[in-house]
Image (cartoon, rainbow, N blue to C red; front, side, top):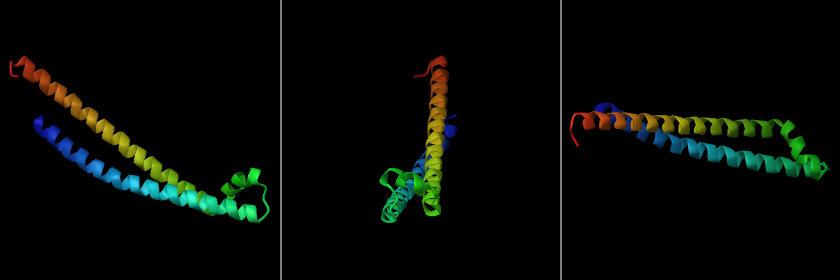
Length: 109
């Protein structure tokens, strides 16, 4: 069982490294979305669109929609990786608890 825990720890380490890249991608996508959205609002205001509806109008623009979809996709991937890491950590804790029970029952400490 110790080998399984070691394998899971290696996998966990790799998943955390991947998550760092996913976090960077998510942050970049969010920054792009915010920038595209701000420029679209400015553009709508320059066209004479009322400030109260400019934010609603921009979501019909393809560039804003694409940036939003990219940001949301990056967020979903990041969150899925985080859940995978949490599941793997739980699996490791369960195996460690099982090993502890086995050692306790065999009289080893």
